[in-house]
Length: 206
Length: 206
Image (cartoon, rainbow over all chains, first blue to last red):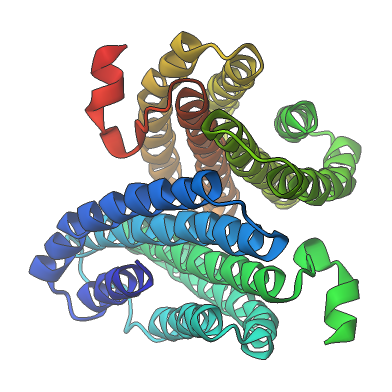
């Protein structure tokens, strides 16, 4: 499921950067296997909670599985949103060479990859590292916003495609948010510390 | 938790429509109680799964609780996003009288209210009704987009505030998405049918 979500996010951004409509098309079709896995994984997690007498650790692992499954499914939806925006964007002449958006994409994908590695390896250090990287994404998003706003005001013909790029940057920010959720879940699953909402207890102990 | 999330969403939109900065300020502060409840409810759900030997129905009720809790917490975040966009929007002269955005807000809030009522009353009919109403929100969002795009192209001075309104309309769409998630969860909790991803089995039986 993690691999599928990563692949969809990567393909959606590549479709944009390389103006590859058939790849964008493939992303639209690629959501279905993710949706099937989403339902199947949930079903199995429910089975584990019902049929076994789960220990506190088991409950954490299984419920974290349910939550991470939900985040991955939404990353799949975000990839579809990016592919749809790419179709609309490519109907216009390019606004500008794409620099910060691929940078945002690399950063968000790196966060997702490390959050999934942290999950597989139960590596809380790597999960904390992912949490620390969300601010960079917010900074890039603001930079993209300000730059594209300038284009729109100076040349109203760029308004529509520039708007699509702004929306794409918001989608990439959401991939980072989901990676952050996954990292927080890994920390909880492994250590039992709930570090969400900047609850500092767990983080200080780290 | 549901009441707090509803109230935050309502206050954020009222702050925008009534240009009420102190109300927007209150929304920013109002996220903290939601975050605390989010952690507390999760903690109790884990306790229920560990300390009792849960039946299949119990597991569904408790895991649905965890998921709905997550959706409500994110609605709280969306309300904060709307309040932040309101601060930025109100630094500019108004682009136009706000008509479709309050309409979107009413629609999204109605979906959320009914999803929560469906949860409390275990009313799957009402939950299915919520699912049917998401398309209206998408239509309104597209309408808002096209109209504001026209303003931006015709008068570039409106670009920045119009952009904020477009982002606010996306936030309202997300409240509808979360209401939809909650409604799907209610159907699963009550009937055991997973109707997500347009899985039609449950819906046809309905």
